[in-house]
Image (cartoon, rainbow, N blue to C red; front, side, top):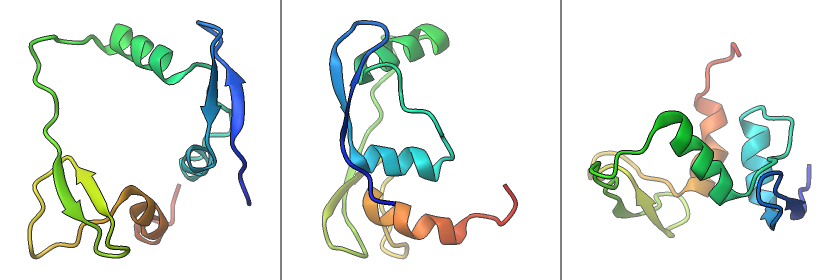
Length: 104
């Protein structure tokens, strides 16, 4: 299925935000059938309210790596090792369905 960027109005703040084709693909890969109702900053705020946000908690450290499939630079939340391939988000999403268990 070919996805096209959509413009959606946030249910909380009323701003218009883009729901990109790649985000739509990601939502579909997760089995989500509804478009988001809130912009990214309102989703982040609701998430912080729900789960709490500790200002003393350090930000997650990200590491640079080169994608083993396409060669683009990627940011990953773990320190890459030389004995394991690292993939950018796009390539990882392409190969990941092959690694998923059949039962869902």
